[in-house]
Amino acid sequence: MSSTLTVIGNYVSPYVRKVLVCLDLKGIDYAIDPIAPFIGNDEFTRLSPLRRVPVLIDGDLVLNDSSVICQYLEDKYPTPSLYPVDIVKRAKARWLEEFADTRLADVLIWRLFYQLAIRRHVFGETTDEAVVQKAREVDIPSALDYLETQLPVDGFVFGELSIADISLACYFRTASFVRYAVDAEKWPRVAALVQRMLALPSFQKLARLEDSMLRLPLAQQREALVAAGAPLTEWTMGCGVPRYGFPRG
Amino acid sequence: MSSTLTVIGNYVSPYVRKVLVCLDLKGIDYAIDPIAPFIGNDEFTRLSPLRRVPVLIDGDLVLNDSSVICQYLEDKYPTPSLYPVDIVKRAKARWLEEFADTRLADVLIWRLFYQLAIRRHVFGETTDEAVVQKAREVDIPSALDYLETQLPVDGFVFGELSIADISLACYFRTASFVRYAVDAEKWPRVAALVQRMLALPSFQKLARLEDSMLRLPLAQQREALVAAGAPLTEWTMGCGVPRYGFPRG
Image (cartoon, rainbow over all chains, first blue to last red; front, top):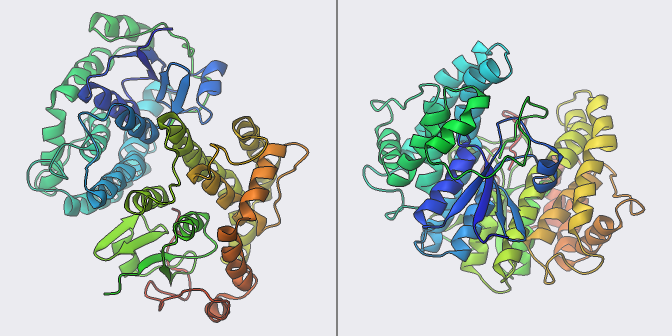
């Protein structure tokens, strides 16, 4: 068995992106075992009991949950550290990660991106416009109002780049696929942090791969990704028409 | 300001219980700022942006999310350690904690306890019997089937007592309030681990407090808890009739 780490996931997922950015920042080689959103065979169910991406495979170890995976990478490959050394800052960073994974995921991904992109283009369903409108007018502003109180004018949230900055940025990137952008007049700190983060080489490398596949039908995505240099393994988790619910992660 | 840690929470919550058990095992004094389930004033919203319990207050630090809080306690008070030293075991322990907080919470708390106890007795609504039936026949068995493959015949999951054992047990304890018990014929490892955990002094101490209040109307719970020795502060988070959604945490 190769010693290269494998990540089961799709470049669209913010949870997958979080892990890939951490891997890149730590200089760790990895391969992606691609899985189309909403698809997964029984082998995927065996590896991911909640049917979520990402899954990390490191030799005999199969690990689920993006937060658990990132903390494992930090423990195993401590340099450069992506968690603050100071205990209080570290706790606050983990909280912002949790806020991103829970609340930003809810308002930006499930109430916006899922409604506008996935329901429409993957399931051929109609967007629930009421959900989208409430997300734009109430839910997202409320989450950003809170974040604005937590972020610095400049630099990263806890001085050094940390899991907090990375996690937050991942959700705004997926939301940008449906042309969502933070209003910098209303939430200047959030807008500036997202801009700083997405300009980092680790996000830029992924953005090139994301852009190469985003507007293509599923059947053409693999070829486009390989052409763009994505480190793909064979599909082993199923491909084709959606069989299960969306792997939330 | 006192140096005693304060936990905002209610003894019914499995998320609160997880933190209280960790505090007890580490020998850390704390006070409970009580909050009735489903209740919370604007000060609570300020301290808990997702309106979830528990909240930990340690001097100037206000911390949310039970997993973030438990990891903070481990970092600040490392002895006795509640996270495996081995990096792979530690990652697996965090995953089981996540599985408990997400999946067990979903099937045991939201689809069972909430339906049978909270909807009926707090909101005066009717239990959705279809949800309860599916929980009993499909959702809970499916979660236990997975857990049974992850647990040992005897002892704790990773040798020493860890956050994995603690987290898992907390959900079964709250489910027991609606008389749910794991079928030891079908899931002997799960049943045995839960039994071992709930027999620990840290769980037993809490059980006495939980039992003192469980069948009482809200208005009488405080007096009963104080009589039973609960370390309650004044109510500062609001009490009375429910104003908001349930603080999930």
